[in-house]
Length: 409
Image (tube, rainbow, N blue to C red; front, side, top):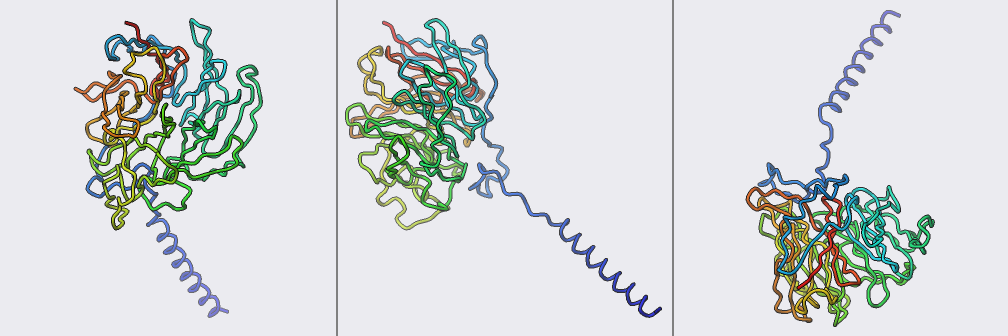
């Protein structure tokens, strides 16, 4: 019995020792957490960089606290604070009765702005969605597209409490979140155009359903891929004469201050390839995702919009309020850079080009949101919306405000 007891004690001691060693091994070397998505592609040479995405304010900013007098416009133009109380407000869509619907990214809300002629009121239509940046309006119905959900609110302008129709299954949305927030709009063909951004800063695509623009029938049927190689488009419009789609696109991060540029493109036919992930701005091979003749067959951009400038909303002006030379001009909101040691953007520019996309010029239009001297900023213009009277609304995602631009001689 003593021998058995002694052997059991030894075995017990060995077992405890082995168990302790295993436990130590598990606690000594925990798996390193993956870097945040925005750091993906950062080279070792930039490992100590302090550059990081800029946090939004995401709280209500009273009109009295908005330094509207700092905004600069060409002679004859005037800007006013048109609405406040829309934290994180981005893309805008106008209803048939004149109400404005505004999507958000981080806050998960969609707002409705009503106008009684002298003041605007804001209410939340829906909340707690996953980045419902995409809003569009057609035939009396508001369409809301989040990363994992598509909702349609029929007759919402007359019936604010209407329950949404869930259309998610019909659209077959890919699941990855990064760059998968949307800008959506109905084209002249009656189709709903939807971009699906790359699920990374730079990578080989895990499946081909990303980095593309699609179009659908309003009920989600008839899906067609119309463009590929589009890293992250969050703004587009149709040329008033040719009816061709023009869109903005964000270039990748962590390739230095000056490359690659964000871009504006023209889709003159279905099926064009715009380069991602191996080619940027039409002529710049990627150093990480390498490919022989990487830019061969890639559709070049209409205009280079500045490196990391966050080129967002795209709107062709078709109204009669602005001077004649503005008619048909493309306006592009550049929300402003974070992946650059010297900030650029924080403005609205015009892209003046012929209908075939040639001879483009990028010209400042709305500035004053950033102080060049100390690199501080107070606002970040994101989208434009032309009103029926020819004035233009501008959303400021940073302050949750909408400005109205008018012109008078």
